[in-house]
Image (cartoon, rainbow, N blue to C red; front, side, top):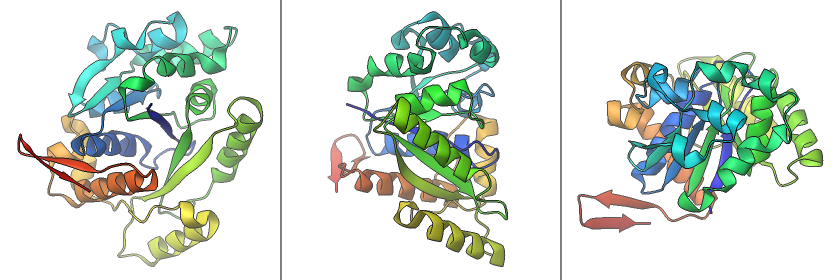
Length: 269
C-alpha cells in the first residue's frame, strides 16, 4: 500500500513543485513505483514532466468535481516508474464548485485510496495556500513534507501551516504527521544561509533532512524543458541532492533501496 505524502507550504517560492517532481523521479530511478498528483492550479508539476496542459482531455479537476476514475485520468510513465495525475486551468474553479459538494474534503482521498495498491509512494503537489484543494491533499495524506527556502523569512507562515495540520488531525485525519522538512535554495556562500539552517534545525530538530537542496541553474532550467533534473542533467548538483533525498526518505521509512544497473543486474541496499 502506497504511503501518501503531500508536499506543502502555503508560502510560495519554496521549491515545492521542484521537490515533488524531482523526488518522484529520483525514487522512480530507485525502482519505486510512484504516482505524482498535481493539485496546484498552476499545473507546474504537469508541465515539469513534459505534459502539455492545454491538450489534456481529462485532469485532476474531473476526479474532484465529476468523480472520474484515477485510471482514466492518469498519464502512465511520464518518467521512469512515475505516473502522474495532471492538472490544467480547469482546476482554478474547482474550489468554488466544491463549496457545496457532499464530502468535499475527502474527494481526493477516496480517489487515491482506489489505487494505493499499485504504488509505493504517492506525492501530492499542493497549492501555496490553505484552501479546499490543500485541505483535500492533507486529508488524503499520511504525512506532509515541508520545503523551506533558506531565506530571511524562512519560517514565515510555517506556524500557520502547523496549526492547520493540528486542526486536520483533530477533525479529519488523526494520523497526519510531518514526514520531514527540506531546506531548499541554499547558497552556502552567504552567512544568512547558515543562520537560517541553524534556526530551522532548532525549530524542527530531527525532522530536518540532512539533504539540502542548493541553488542550481540546471535545476531551474529543467522545468522549461519538461524534464526532471535526473534526466535533464544527471551529473548536476541538483540531481545528486535529490537523489540523496530519495535515499534518505527510503531509509527513514525502512524501505529497500534498489537500483537497476543495465538490464539484468541489480544492486540492493
